[in-house]
Image 1 (cartoon, rainbow, N blue to C red):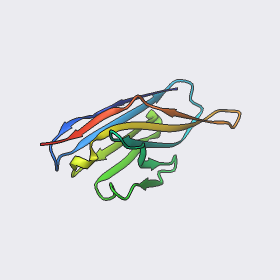
Image 2 (image 1 turned 30 degrees about the vertical axis):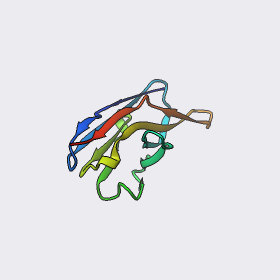
Image 3 (image 1 turned 180 degrees about the vertical axis):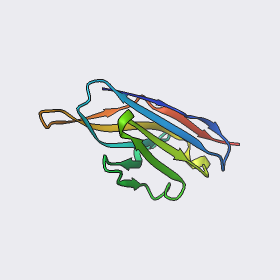
Image 4 (image 1 turned 135 degrees about the vertical axis):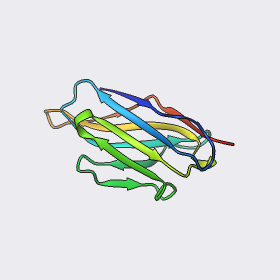
Length: 119
């Protein structure tokens, strides 16, 4: 399974970006999909997750500004980021749990996409 992210870049404070992550490969079913972020010198933290039933969870720091969504037919997850702040600057990673027909679940990470918020 491969996760390909896109949509990162440089944006001014108060601006918006939309991240996309498409999963491909041998996929039986996808459970939770999510976005994590890691700033230099910090650990990787959850930003937002969404289940296959569209139940969402957000870090307190992004609530009301970020919206996670997914297209199950395309195995794609999105992160709409509004009202961006300099403290949102980080490498953003896509993450997903994929189930196999055996019932086992496997965790996958994308390569990361850089988001920089600066004037």
